[in-house]
Length: 269
Image (cartoon, rainbow, N blue to C red):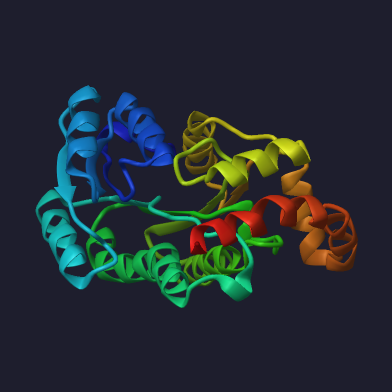
């Protein structure tokens, strides 16, 4: 059944981020009514003012219980039919010197918060005739990449959560989807990561490509959607023959370490 976009009410987390903003523009252009959530009130206000249609702004930190309470209260009033967990942060560098507090914050933001928010909102989504949960993951949710240990752990966890929940709700009205962008030009990328991608020749997508992929994924009812080649191939290969990917990435390790371990040392100074 085709999605009736103009009938959708969507909670979008991380709306003030690069991917979040691109998704907001794409969905608003399709007629979706948005509940925009993030921590930067000024950015959210500017975004909402630039979007077509009528939308709601909720400035809240969803990594806290109070923040989730605030968001869920608004969703009760709006009868949501769609949840897009787009909020996320990154952490790169030498794992042995990464402060534990940064690991805690990353796992809380990228994994626990979307799980907790989804759990709170499922009873509301189940009231809709058809509902959708989209978790924005990463290619690094399928491929362990050097100097990204904590980030990969969070995205591997998000992918596992999505897959399990999708199977649990297979006979319900709620579809659960996992969208895996590759490197994307957003503010969460440090200068070191940008330089590393350039040195490795990695393709970097604009956020708009992620937004377009999300719409295509839902319209085609694809539970999993990986953006870009060869990343899509590598993700599948890593699942079947990880030793081949081990060897391929081992050749890139000196370049990765040159950029990302030095960046870690600078952060600690």
